[in-house]
Length: 323
Ligand SMILES: Nc1ncnc2c1ncn2[C@@H]1O[C@H](COP(=O)(O)OP(=O)(O)O)[C@@H](O)[C@H]1O
Ligand SMILES: [Mg+2]
Image (cartoon, rainbow, N blue to C red):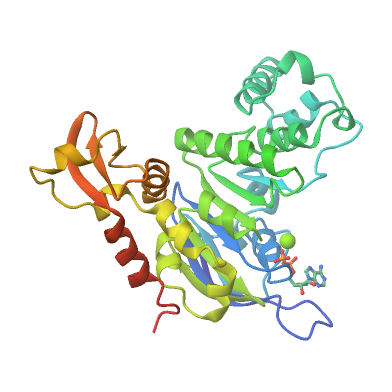
């Protein structure tokens, strides 16, 4: 668990703090996403967690230990760090790049080599194809994968990811996000993830930290933030399609009603699984020109989801800013 306690950072000559009295907790095994416009202090926070910057005031602790008391080199070896673009050493091969931390840790050549091959495979690269290449010989998406592999090389419990998928095109980006979420299900790292893209934040985050001008504006799960934005800034950040985003995160079973006898006739072919999002149910209804769908768990009909229930739900939550 990472705890920030009243962290502030001023850079010389700036007219406001880069980070202003931020307090928050990142739970073990969670992805905590820091999201907000450029210049709001996201990168500075990550850099303070691995002591590339020191705060002017406040404390940061990891698993109960103040990081001021940890040797910065040791600290950084226990934290994987992925940054946008660069980061790979241009004159070293991919294998050498991914081996950096294991070598620092004194792993044997054989163990390191095996680990590198496993990691490259894990992030979706073909080790035989890329390990002897140099960074400039890879595509943007491949380089990002190498960046992730390198950060995970020594199996650090914590990862800091600063716009890790920012430099690739939208399609590759979605694939990298999906693959990373799959890896995370397996490895359950504690992750601080920075993005300025609210859609990426909602998709990747167990927990969101919304920032503006160095200050924390709101924290909460994606659905919490979507359903009760703290102020106009958050509302604007969430975008005009906030309602659609909510329906994408709401399981069909949460809005369904009990089945009654006659329904058997009416949802002809119109069915959805209970855990699928309401947004999909809506799409099915539109395609089939129906006003309700049967909600199933496996083959069992467990409820009905009606167009009207969805409409009511939207009007309940679209009231705007939390009072
Ligand atoms: N090394 C630095 N020296 C001076 N100002 C900096 C430095 N690093 C960041 N800043 C300033 O601190 C603020 C926060 O920057 P940053 O943390 O990089 O924001 P973000 O990652 O959210 O875009 C910005 O106003 C930026 O100009
Ligand atoms: Mg940044």
